[in-house]
Length: 390
Image (cartoon, rainbow, N blue to C red):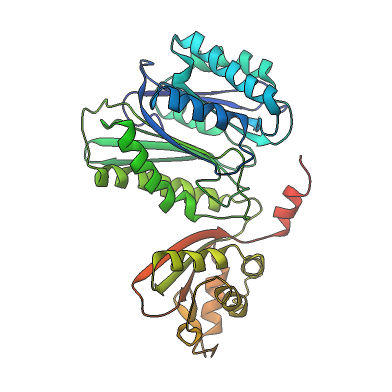
């Protein structure tokens, strides 16, 4: 189950021809009755925002946070495509609105794929009636939608959660261009809770900050980042902000981790945690500096617990530290403290470095603040995937 797990939602995934491979490339997530639901979204902070981002921002404002559906396409980002790209995105939204009998402002649109290539709006227009016609509830429909937004992803990313009798579900895509300043990917989260768009905006902002904004693969922020949440109200249950946040955050956390686990060419998922900091901002700055270091990431691919690279990044994170208080541990085994390498069980650390998931902990003092950033190793396969546009 995924976006169709909460009551009041349907989904579909079809091949419209945007991808030359004829694989699924169009997903649709909608309310079951096409009545607009309370919604909110976060978008990329990249100034080179793609046409779908521009259109979705406009529609979310025009509809006062009332959304009936999200149309998502993969295989072409419709980014850096000028006024023609924006017109094409609007044309697709209007076409779906006409088929569904709703106002165009109640539809959001997302796209992912290569940048700078004219978006094949004709293909999208052919696929829209089919995507509308195949809308359904249930596990298969939700999975089909998740599959349709994949690009270099190797598996469909889905998640569900419950808080009492309220359900939450989500789908996402992402495997590269991951260095969130909002969220570097596409995601749709649904819930059957009763909520206002204002409440959803508060909750989603916090959930994104604590999940998608704390993953990084390659230090690159996409032009197309979009995370949308919709609340059908079909459960007739109202939740507090804290309860709603817990439900949404669990879904976002799962999707974020799946994205890093599926990072292009990766062999490791690494959780970099900074503890003992004076403030959470300090802890986050240090964890992110280590997590985004190409040298550190390469050492994980080489299964080499080279703490010297970690210490170097900690010392340049822009945080005022007493380096005599800094220690580094791999999988709970301290390898560096008091300015020198510690005596440690090298075979035990070697076993840690062989793992698919690894915890790296940097302690910087006795403060109460901590933060975790999740990253992946840097491999020759990542270079092979990204040295050309296709």
